[in-house]
Image 1: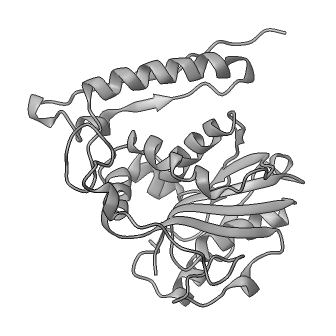
Image 2: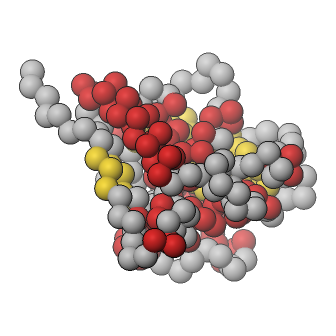
Length: 269
């Protein structure tokens, strides 16, 4: 059996002026990873080596205070609060939020988020999504790992998709970057994309009812065989009303997903 060797490729553009090095040079980082099984070990080694080089050229910057050298510095780390036990063990509703289990398909086992959407976490996600700091997804993706219970079987990771128009505007899907990092921690299990075909209206600023209506029937599963009978982890950066992950989970459940666990970096009230 022959395998096509496609090593990880990193393209770095420094931009027009030297002062733009640091955070803004990271926006120019374009990374594509080989996904063929025969290349995973080599690809992982290349990624590790390349990460060390990139961190030397463009040191990580703390999203809280701008200090160089770490994604989160020693002074900002103590300010980051984790979410405690939710009021609902299934939908992950906080004590100040209403349980939405009645809206979830049966395949959804749980919805979990690592942090409240404020402070350092809010700034870090903003830097990733709106300032194009794709390399920050490495650190944020690692923060999802503790949310997965030990011993849980995961067959496939699914990122919440962006609408094609939004994807063209931003140039990348932050949930996909997080999903790839999360997948790498699980021995590079498959990452399967679903598609968004509905409204392009941003969810930000909409009420709970408006968010639900905005994403109703907005997602489709192009490759049903990739999710049928499988145990999935659905990943997003921020969960607010659960409308988006519920709509995605509904499409995946209708495609035959066995179980679905939804994970996000942050939960907003």
